[in-house]
Length: 337
Ligand code: NAD
Image (tube, rainbow, N blue to C red):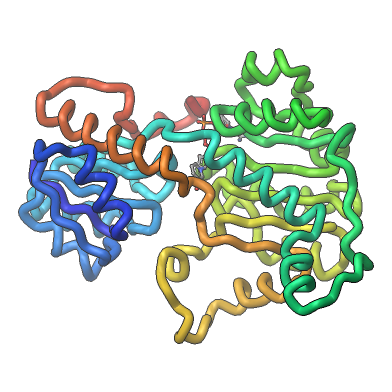
């Protein structure tokens, strides 16, 4: 198939070329899909977008008009795709169902440890010749309660790690995971999880139902000094409410690999630019907030699997074979899969 890879970086090219073995004809552009750029996909049967591409109805209309038949997402999440419009236009949407839950789970643990043990401050301090420990006091993870909201593949991978560290595990998920239950995770209501957890980590998809799941009221339920980690999707958290909870010193620390308005910032080098997003800029001023640019997935193993699955998706689509990676528009009122 002729496939246009948008928002692509050199590492995407390398991994897709390695997995492709000459089967499909790829073109790579750094340009993200937007209403004014969608025309670049004209004539490509398949488009291979990433999480920062816009796939709203206007872009999908333009893609369909240009002859695109398949969106082969290079991501697990598909919250950025207007699925009902894709279905109406006859565009097939496929995703990489799971590539490396370990990559994201291990990164979430990294954020927890960085914030708890103040590694981000210690790194700078030592380089400046300041070897004081004041202000770097942490707590043992062993014996602490960690709440995981969403206990699918990534949540379960993190539960295994935390179980090994001796944490008490609470979970909130409409579909309890037997792997987590076998580790002793207790499934509780969202309010109980928020109220009892020293650390809360988000591992659920962004959907209309989960938009701003973590709002002012729910932040207030968390114990004073609690840590909040988000490696899932930015809009799960109401960022203004988060900033208020940090300013009032209610939250102890926050680790964010995702941000609700990240599309214009992340995956670009803006070091000579002025950041005009004041909310984002405010987040960066807190000493107890660590922000990373959507890099939790970014391991060699994950890139390899993303590329291999994308090629399989193109192969199966071209051959008219069904595979479990097709994403369908949700049926109104149906529970999440
Ligand atoms: P998964 O589908 O295996 O698990 C998601 C879990 O969330 C499921 O068990 C589901 O039942 C649960 N869930 C759905 N709605 C819920 C709700 N309202 N409340 C509580 N739980 C709910 O997905 P996964 O592979 O574990 O990935 C989780 C999320 O991680 C993805 O949706 C994606 O947004 C994010 N992600 C981020 C990165 C990154 O680089 N930062 C990489 C991959 C995935």
